[in-house]
Length: 491
Image (cartoon, rainbow, N blue to C red; front, side, top):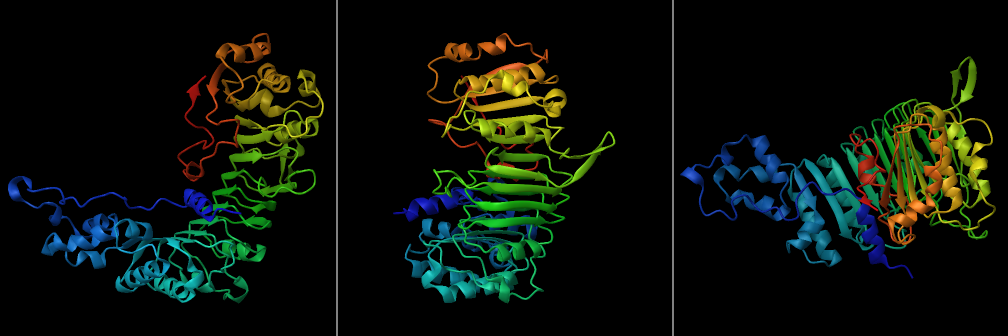
């Protein structure tokens, strides 16, 4: 039987961190005196003081009215930041569902707005459907900007009302453990005019409802789907999207039709929780890439499980080729003992001729079939990115098999501009660095095409292997060039 508390804990991992400290005390609360007796903070402009108040926990924010007469009107005029979990920590409400909903209703009704950020993450709304409708109306009327709304209910059978679409001022929206609104009854004029970030965490959604939400979000830049409870097709037609990330979910198709600003398309743990009864295999899915001229980062692809289709043709030396020349960083998961899966790896790499960084996640082989040696990789047409552009290779979860070493040797002898080969050794596979080097001995005798490449060994942070490392928070930080790189410990 599913442990709902563990499940809800997992959902909390993916929702945004509130823009308020759980422990921030009032500035004057521990001070018995002020140097030279002058209160300089109260002399700051109203907008600065309101900004300070909005970053305090609710109880302390309200208490600022007692600091001085200058502060008394500011709490009601400061943009509201309401985090229900803070109310519970500060003793403003008991953990009983009725008490929580009552306190939230009073605060939302009393504050005139605007609402800068509201985190409603501690209620089972199934017994409070009237409040649910009222909250959304109040949030819409008072200009809600960032909303995180998590329902503590399993199974997921409570549908959000279509009133959600009246919150036109939203810039960030995260929904967890809901059924998405039935958009059939939503007016076509409904629109999230300011929404830039949308997160759907362990929600049940129909394909048409997901498509409607994306269509009604004309400036959306970040889309995150975690733990989708139903297989849907994701069709991307957006002139604003920059990052799409999918985790612990199952999408039948990912179709990038027209996304000229898309920079990152990332997935992890895709299909792991939707294993079919057919010999324990995951059902295959298809990734179609059409117009995405700025797509730079792509992963984690799984040769053998993901079919890839390049729809956009590029003229190269007078010949049409179905390639994606913009991709610089790619991550793949590979079963090195499954020959049929390995056969698709060269074809994947040929689709991305300008690839500079390759992450290879070694998956445990569930049905080993035949040995793969160095000759296997030499057969077939040349792989342009390996020969001409690849600068960095990260091999995750190295366990020492000959097929893995053969792949690394192939890269070493073909990659002309390779600068770094990083090998992350799977936990528990080797007792010492000497043992690892013994397995990698073929690399020392290889005829390296690059004379400047450095080989670095690190210990994998996972115990008994693991899923690909991925930071969903770094993925949306465009100042971070590669969110699949982490801090490593030297082996």
